[in-house]
Every structure is written in C-alpha cells, then in structure tokens.
Length: 346
Ligand SMILES: Nc1ncnc2c1ncn2[C@@H]1O[C@H](COP(=O)(O)OP(=O)(O)OP(=O)(O)O)[C@@H](O)[C@H]1O
Image (tube, rainbow, N blue to C red; front, side, top):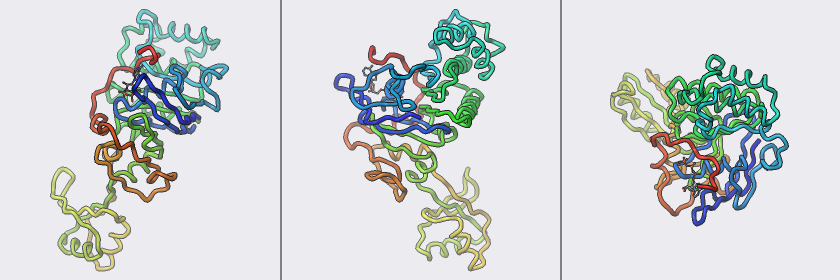
C-alpha cells in the first residue's frame, strides 16, 4: 500500500508536485498517468526517499521510506533500466546488490529465472538490449521479494513482444497480492495493463479511479446499431428523443447509426416492440486516449454522474484552470529517455 498525503515538491519557482494525495492498493496494477512534466518521476522519487517533499508525506505500508527497516524487502523499483555497470554480468550485478542488502545469494537465481534471464546471466549487462535491461531492472526490483513495486515508464522503447511480457508480468505480480504502481505515457498500453489509475496534470491530482470508470466518465459511450431498414430505425430512435448520428460505411464496417446516452438493452427492446430486424447492436466505449485528452486538455468539459468524492465528478477532480494546456503533450509523445535518479541534483 502506498499513501500520499498533501505531497508537494518545489524546485525553486517550479512546483513539480502540488498537494497530491492518492492511495495505491495492493493486488492490482495502478497506472500513473500524466503529460510530460506532470510530476510523475518526482512523485516516484519522493516515494522512494530519493527526493524530500517540500510538504506532505508519502508512506509505504504505513511508514516513510527512511523509516523502513529493510527497504528492499518492502519496496522495489525500476527507475532507470540502464543503471547498471556495463562490464558486470547480470548475475554479478544482482549478487552485489543482494550482498549489500543481506539478501541470500540463491535469491539472485530465483529472480533471474522469474524474468527469463537465466541463460544470459553470465553475459555483460552493457551488451543487453533494452528489453533485457528492463528485465534485469525488474529482477533487481524483485530481489528483496517486496510487496510494493514501482516502475517508471517500464515499456518505453520496447518492441511488442517486450511490452506484452511486461504487461503479463505486472499482472502476475499484482495477482500475487503486491502493490504495483507503474507510470507511463502509453495510454493504450495502460488501458490494457492497469485496473486503477492515478492521473495527474501540472503536479495536481486529476483523477483517482478505476480505468473503466475513468474512460466511462470522461469519454462518450454510445451504441452502434444497424439493420436492413435504416430509415425506419432512424425514425424509431429519434421518435424516442434519442440523438442519432449517421456513421458512413468505412473501416469500422457498413453504414450504421451511433446513439449516445442509451444502452443496447433499450435499443434492442425498442426494435423488438415494432418487429424491426437488427444486424448489429454493439456498445462502443471511448478510449483512454479520448478520456485523457478530454480531462487534461485545454477545453475541458466534464461528463459526470459517477460517485466521486466531493469536488469531483465521477472520481475526477477538475484540473487547475491556469497555465499551458496539458493534453497535447501527453499523447503520442515519443518515449522519453529513462528517468534520472537523485532529482535534487538536477
Ligand atoms: N531536479 C529538478 N530540478 C528542477 N526542476 C525539476 C527537477 N526535477 C523535475 N523538475 C521539474 O518538475 C516538473 C515535473 O517533472 P517530472 O520529471 O517529475 O515530470 P514527469 O511527469 O515525470 O515527466 P516525464 O513524463 O517527462 O518524465 C517539470 O517541470 C520538471 O522540469
């Protein structure tokens, strides 16, 4: 469990993290989303005691990092996959960290096996591909068998096979009951990986919610419907006061109607009462990208009705209203370099 309370970090006049409060629960993968410069890496560094908060606290299993008796046994992190001596073998790198943290040497072979690096354990880590380096970073994080794991942009630059492996591995770690907190720009990947989300913009909390709720609350969901008698269908739906949009034939399939603010049940039953044949009736959900742009973009428009805390809409906190737009920077940005350690020195 990770709990941040009023977490704030200022670097001179820059407020990198601004009064941020959130909780990351065990047994799930929680995605940490935000545009470039939103404060994700700074927050992760504060969780790990690498940066001191200007105000507020962040606790791992109820304690601040500095108060943990055996930190590596409580929390593991992948911040920078290339943080390894290039001439050391993977095994030697892990043995060195294990020895300096009183972790039995046999654990090294266990974690190498867990991440699929046993066959190359004796090879120079400097010659590893990015995917192999990421695996070695994850093995390092797992050395102390910690219940809490932090991964900063773990899929950056990986090929599809590497991305799939990381996704499945995260799910496995969460299924083992661990707390898995993972930051990423790759929204579509996060939609597949994370059950819960903490979304920040300009250092502030925008939303803490399940991924499904985030998408449902922030983006439009609609029903796609078509049949052999499209005109009759159109008239039936508008006659019920529903908004109907024509979707021309294209990549998504034959021409159809898109009906927001309804359900497949409602349309199916309506069609049934007048004996109208349907060839397609499908719920269409928005994407995480749409939701993210909508909530972090300049022209913010809130859709609500959910069950968020006071001052929020469906778990969504309105972002600050001043300053530059947030959304554009986040989506489709090329993978940035690996985050740096020891942020105060930057
Ligand atoms: N050591 C530092 N000194 C000064 N400013 C910093 C330092 N670390 C971060 N910042 C600033 O704080 C803000 C938040 O940066 P941070 O790296 O935490 O964001 P991020 O969400 O991780 O971004 P990215 O996705 O690009 O890595 C940015 O404006 C950044 O320039």
